[in-house]
Image 1 (tube, one colour):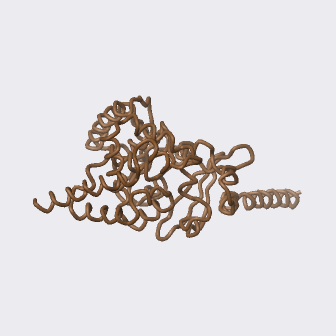
Image 2: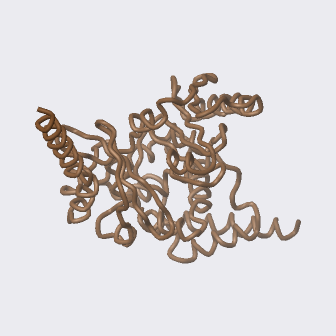
Image 3: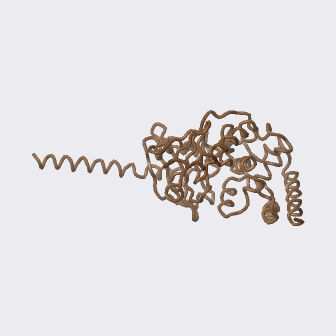
Length: 339
């Protein structure tokens, strides 16, 4: 009898292990199938429709960026999961959600993050729910209160009110890498009403992303331009930075970086594309107003639209923008040099 029970336990354990083994590479297998796609219609079967423009732009099959990505491992929690990839010296992860029998890439990481932080502490500050592995200090809570003021400012700027969203506060080290996918203090990322940041509770750049995502997401040059325009100080104020951005414009103009893989790769190579994006979006906002900017971030979620053509049809020709940006940068360099 004992031998039969032992055999039953062994067989059950073996079958469980087999089941795990069969499921252990489902996301990596899904990724490997995705990168074989040749058309946008084929790619749409692998990405949530609402997120298609943004994700496809970042990991477009056949692009040099994707060709350098190597899948490392995966994790699955119920109907949510993530795949870890290595690109150059960076380790990134992409979230997945299960729809019926298929796993789809998504920017909605909320279910995944809730699982990863199920035992963390929740602290309400204004309309923001902070989620942290240990209590926030008094100094940190004061900084969090300043964040509520920034939230009010952006609410007026974008003309919408966010009822609530979660802010994941991760500590430096393994916790930061696991939750945020970053290891530097102050680093952060934002996805639909969820901010992830490393040891900071006042990340206005990511807050601007949250507001922009309410309208649409797609092109990283536009998205980062909006986030830096509303969430960062002037990045081209100093002569050295202004000159670096001027050099980017001289090399095929701002429009070169409207190509998503080109923008992402340039950023990974430490080129000043964020500063260029900030300058461009601020110039358009000052000249055409906030309503036009909102229309731009709304339209970009449609991946079928040629974003450069849309800009030239609804804002101005690329030559006019590039000429204006050169003038701004040269003035910045001159002022900084005189000082």
